[in-house]
Image 1 (cartoon, each protein chain N blue to C red):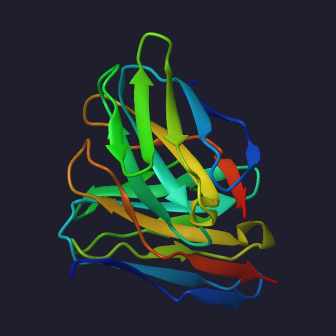
Image 2: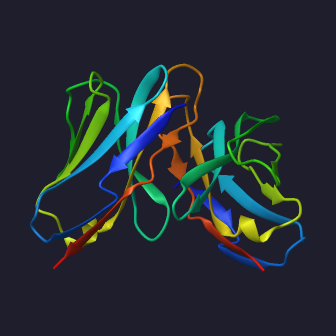
Length: 112
Length: 112
């Protein structure tokens, strides 16, 4: 069955370290999204991609980067992790411009 | 600025009760509204509504959109403990903009 996966599911890191969170989908969706979810803020868009080699900044993109070298993967990199980036991170994908988004299981990141 | 507001923020009911969750929106060039259910994991898609007055139904859950008054409701009849979750709504603009504007969610607790 087609699916969307994230790894790792849990990560503890230290301030200043570079961290990469993986997202892989097997639906062949062009659109992929990264969100963070924090109490009181709901889901906030970090970066998104509409296809290979396309990346765009969301509302909370500072300190994060993404790259899209193929359809299936959109890794999210924290260049120098900060305690404010402790959060749950969700990856999502959608088929068309007006279709629903399907979410991965999430990665809980703790920055000490 | 586009925004989506959900009410109430939290709700506690007893099994068998009927609940109505509200989602109001102010979105430029509105196209569709989506409902998701989030338990202790990733959001899962429930409904997408694009036309006013047409009810979408799945089992005990139903939803309707009012594009004149700019809101949607999600109804759950004969609630069960398994309905306990955070219910999220999100709005999308028309056109090529695939981003979703998210509300903060309604936390529903169904007690036995």
